[in-house]
Length: 311
Image 1 (cartoon, one colour):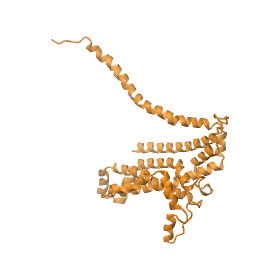
Image 2 (cartoon, rainbow, N blue to C red):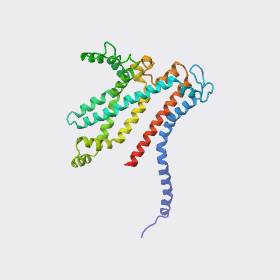
Image 3 (cartoon, rainbow, N blue to C red):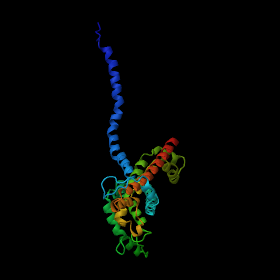
Image 4 (cartoon, one colour):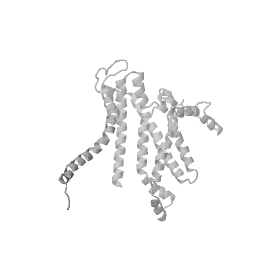
């Protein structure tokens, strides 16, 4: 004879809503710590920077100072120094992004084809990236030095007169850009190497069976399948270049070298805030630079969505 528990039928209906409520709050509960940190360290500083940009804040006075509205923005947009430094930053971005994408892809393709000592090639290409910027600046200051520099000595051996890499306004920014490419090449190299390893081998084998040679496989199979990685590498490098400060300040010197030819937007912000003591104006320039980076990120997001929809 079966024995039925009088409370058994009621246990299921009571437990189900509780389990549903717990499952409903599981996702927001896991996201909440990150959301709080994001609001505290990302959204909060950006909002405070926007508020400060509307005031004539100074390091020599307490508080936010007098309210000036959009006066700082008008002054920045009509300032020759602002546009000069922005142009230097954009030109530096071009000088670093294009070589980094091309060289890192080429080196990743070479390293992927190597069968013996593959770990050595990967280590050699990635090693400069782990160096601190101060060490990189010290090395390239010696390489670019006049009369005693390594590069000038090597060029003199083949009868080439070396320009003033850090003393000529025409060469100072390309010199810093070349040092930056050597320093940061390892990061983009690793991204491309990981993307190459994700390409299915059967796709390349099918292209080879169809008669596609190495060049055609590279052009019509490998490069298109690396499209998302190329977009990611490009936007990361563009944003990093727009924020350039350390290597320019350490290699070219304070003020961007001769005639300020390498002075970046971030250095302009630094000079405005800590040399001229105009924190409100410095916040304005930094917010305008933030809008430029935001526009670059929006373009990358739109390109990524279009690529995903096309796939």
